[in-house]
Image 1: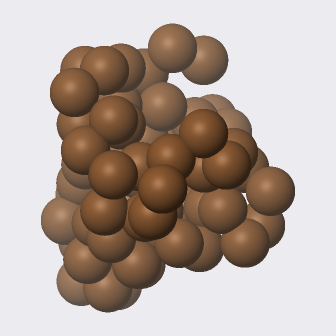
Image 2: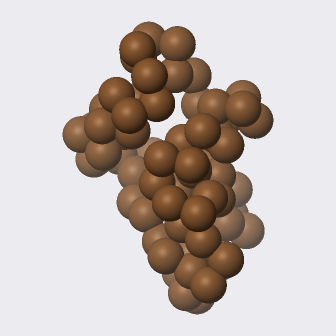
Length: 70
């Protein structure tokens, strides 16, 4: 949990949600992720997971999407 908090404070957290799909939705709505190249959010999530440039941290508040490239 400490690693997720440190990543959030360092500005690497893209979004937080109840699960991975809702986290991608929040990132898209906030303008932190451009999902226009994908047909839907499920496809966008698959692309994010396939890219292996992100990690997901489970916290008591939800799932945090961490960008490992920043």
